[in-house]
Length: 139
Image (tube, rainbow, N blue to C red):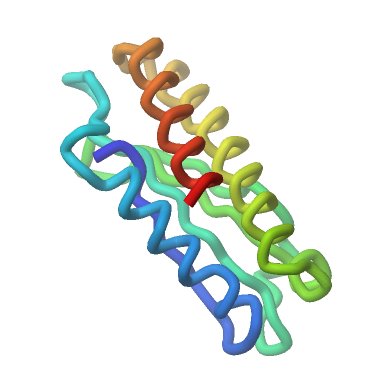
């Protein structure tokens, strides 16, 4: 496993847009073929928080709250998607937006692992990630 993808959703179209993309990303990055080559790091985690009329997640926007997962060899990050961003997007535009969000999170998660001085095969990790994102965009 390379990246766990989770979501905190509100009711409505934002959730409807994200759910199939989250499932697709999970299928790509939660398999035995794509793993982090490291004794220090088991996985990254991205939690999408989709704002809507009932919850705006403190007006958040983009990458937030990066931290080491307590008791695990993992790093997690929240990514807030404000309602004004998703409400006028088509399905294809939203998929491209999510792709960019995952890439942005991946860069920040990588930086955090380096800051913690965790050793991992960065070249393999980047290659596997790029291949996974290519699969996501062509699915």
